Length: 358
Image (cartoon, rainbow, N blue to C red; front, side, top):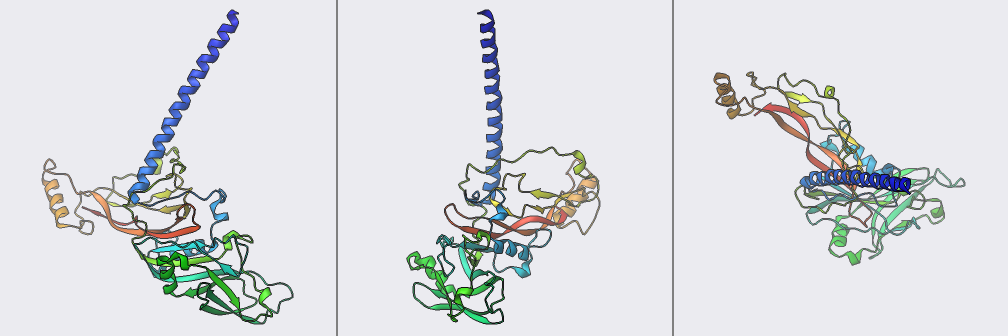
């Protein structure tokens, strides 16, 4: 009996410590999660985790065209290639008709009121033809508005073509859908040459979800504002803590200059809603401003402050090494829950380009 009491006491103490340890870890996770939420809240982005039907490897299901577009508008460093960008916000809407047909597509189309559409296109991925098709022939593909029956765009395409085909859409239809969603009955694909129509096939959600039809709308305007309040999903992972070596940081005793800094979105807990890039080069400024370097002193105030600090350090400190010019990156992330939407956005002031003493 005494031994049983000892065992029960031991189990009770063990359970007590397990509860205490679990509570401690829960508080740590909650604190890290709240910190991640505050960081995102500063940017005013409304992030959402990947839909449940999308696998952990986001790129396996993510639109191939949107990823290609991201690479097109981004430099190797992650910065935006201004010459390749139409507007500062790009929406990608996937069809929500179940992916059963490649002859009609309906898009759940919604845009923010501050977004002004500048260009729109339908992207269809043409699959290889059947073996008995005459690859030397061409076909005319029309895109029609199902609501009005009016043809909106046409392309003459070779039967041997495999890949993405772009159809420019009039902005009138985009504005009409935005004003009157009931008029959005979808788009129909029509092929003039009926004798070879069955040989022309396009990817759908059922055949290949990463290649399914996409309505792409290029916009200007603020889009999802950086300084708007957001409803952060509680499912977003907290930042992951990883040990950092002191040797990762170079000495900052030299003159003011730019230093390397790679930002991994996984470290911020953003990898569940940021599709791409996975990381980018942010850089940071560090170093001294004690020496008179005209190229680094960007303001008259900084020059006066430097002179005063050299005469008497008790009067004031030397100017500080801070970012002088900032660049942008492009970020691809998921849209609102319940909508098959991607957002490719130009994120301003994410990259330090030059440093100065101010």
